[in-house]
Image 1: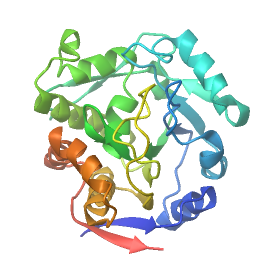
Image 2: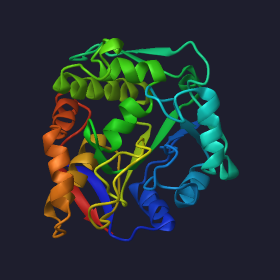
Image 3: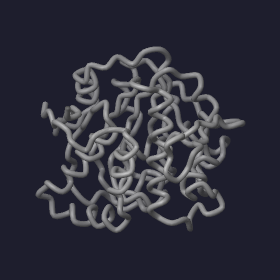
Amino acid sequence: MKSKVYFTKTITPDKVLELYKMNGKALTGKTAIKLHSGEVGNQNFLKPDFWKPVIEHVGGMVVECNTAYDGERNTTEKHLVTIEKHGWNKYFDVDLLDAEGPDLELDIPKGKQIQKNYVGKNLANYDSLLVLSHFKGHPMGGYGGALKQLSIGIASSYGKAYIHGAGVPEEIWTADHDSFLESMADAAASITDYFKENIVYVNVMKNMSVDCDCCAVAEDPCMKDIGILVSLDPVAIDQACIDLVYASDDPGKDHLIERIESRNGIHTIEAATALGLGSREYELITV
């Protein structure tokens, strides 16, 4: 059976909540709400007020993790300052999952490139997961969506280097590229195995730059906004976003497509599908 992906062209905070409710999945227990806090200087990340209605409805804890590259989020001290600067703790309680060690090690028995994923130990405090993703390009992954949030997004600072290096953290920027993409899929599998069916995914196709929200100096968006998608399937929701980019009549899409294709971004979806994370076949339900 095809996975259901709910879609609307109307991009507002209330529409995020409306589609979340239509999805029909009630997250149980204590919910971790993973989003991107935004690198200092980045103009494209989705701000706290945009996510506020759905976060308040779910009633969970906003969670983030430290980065593995130089910037304003690569240490707990700097990241907490950034969270304050960007206004996240004005509205929400925020849990920096890897604020202090040791990391929680998750097994990946079917991993193609890595058999361990290293995440902040505080992840063990949660029973369910809401993945809030800003869909856009990415300098290394080609694109960033639900699968990247599950993998690089939830990994600890060390875990990020481990994924990028395909199991060799010292090769964070030099590892074989497709092996890095497959490692992202492996890491994502460890998170879906951990939370089982207790995950909901939201992708917002807004401010679509070729660059990630992790870039302090990022290009401005290259194409018009497309919409909001919600699903229980991380593969289907990312595939739907890719398909919507290709189907767009916006000439600016060529720049984003070049970024995705030049980094073989679709391979993360292929690898995740091979691991059984979801289906590339989906039913797009337009609202």
